[in-house]
Length: 211
Image (cartoon, rainbow, N blue to C red; front, side):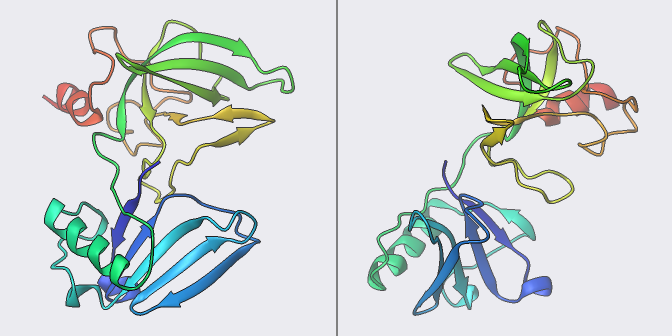
């Protein structure tokens, strides 16, 4: 997956935080190159995070929390990486992170008494395998999917991973996990009406319920 960018000068100082993988937190190594700190997975040697210190010297950043960078800012950032001998090229995730999905298939996980393996369509040409533990998950539902790279209201990042040995790429969400209890406050995933098209951004769904 591509990179995610975060900036919180009041919390961590003038540092642009870039990440693309959680890595193995027990086996990470750091390397400083100029204003950059590279964090690598010690087992794979893959760069999983890059910190740019004194970020405002290079980029005029706006916003707090997860931010987007303009194409000009990405060009400046990648040029600075190259000048310091860093081969990584930063490209950010594009498009909505939370979208309407359709559960095309749902089967029981063979090694669990509550997990289910779904094949959930999130666009015309993309189906994600997502392991879900909600009691009300079933084939045929329209749901909200947090795609890999999504940042939850809690601050947690949704990474590709495994649950009980089965690959899971995303998360099927409840209103509680999305901080939308004012719309609906029931346990289990948020079941949407079929009027919503697959791929519809969460913001449009929220607007529908609030209008």
